[in-house]
Image 1 (cartoon, rainbow, N blue to C red):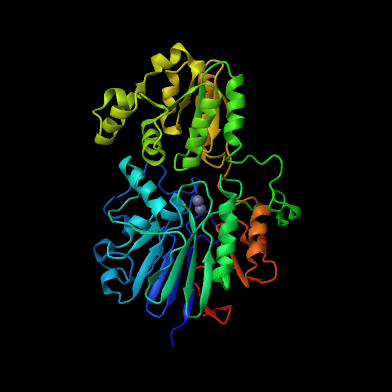
Image 2 (image 1 turned 90 degrees about the vertical axis):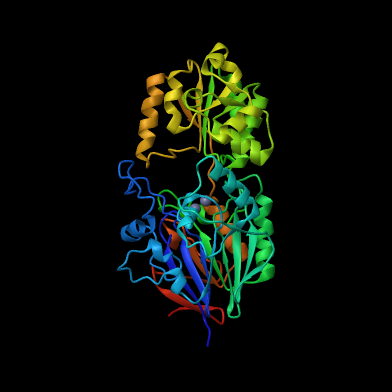
Length: 461
Ligand SMILES: [Zn+2]
Ligand SMILES: [Zn+2]
């Protein structure tokens, strides 16, 4: 008899790298397929070179991707590998991607090209642009689209993507159903973004579809000192000091209006809402926004906005231009540091960490550096101290002007309580055990173990 099993390969008590397989008979879906985010322990320290043609073998050896039969190409596996290659596997497999953060997609390019990898239409639009600007993931394959609220089948498994709000375009949760029952995988979610109503709609739709278990992210939940128990009481509201994606541009504009010199910002440009927010902050404070070429390309393609300039970096000045850069500059004027330096207080200029040395050319006296969730994100990343060193050298004051992509603990608990699943599986968290169900049971799975879904229960195989 066919049964439904869930196997957990990654992301249980790390931030990201969630890899789960749900199997019914010979049909199987795997979601997501990213890499754990941990700048301190990353074996690729900037010195060791990736072997582009041996990634699957190397990542398997390093334990970065899991040993799963039937998803890797025979050519990519080592000769002595015991893993069954994709062409030797008889089952029906698809990979689902909830959103395009690297901790969810980092390894999806390594899946054999014959296996479909699904992402939402919005995600694919974003991915195609990321690929153009050189930020696609390693590997060479095509991606399939799925659509919010539209079910599709992988063998006997039915999948329905449900839109959620997260700090990236195209994020979704998945409702996954087999003849034995259904589960919800939330992906990453937040309620302080531009669209909290999407979370409410997600909850309503999920409940309507029905489910036995919810697999839920718990990123924001920390130790008892940092997240005391009273912060884990369900609450839909945000505390007064929570900066929302919507409030952020106003806050930035206030600071920029008070600032006598140049405005500089550092964002993570997959958050298209933030690009929009920067343009708003520029407008409100009477400053022209200057994007680096890559972000300008995203804004042009995904927002159809042309209300900005392109920063003429050292690279743009001195290298022969790639086709997309040439196209971009045909549509959007570039501006040099010399022009900006004539009137620094009329500009809001992007400066990514990788381009920090551009700050040496800019007149940053009396200026401000708005750290708005670009890398490096925090002191746990060794690059954070390095950034401070550079800012100190040029004498530029940094302030944090961002808001995260993950729901606050109260909001997480609100979502859990509203969904009220019979089985709650918290993960994508350093403290998953602290996210408790309202009336159901909590399951903290173990790596590599399989659990059978039957009659509303999940039991170890
Ligand atoms: Zn994540
Ligand atoms: Zn994410």
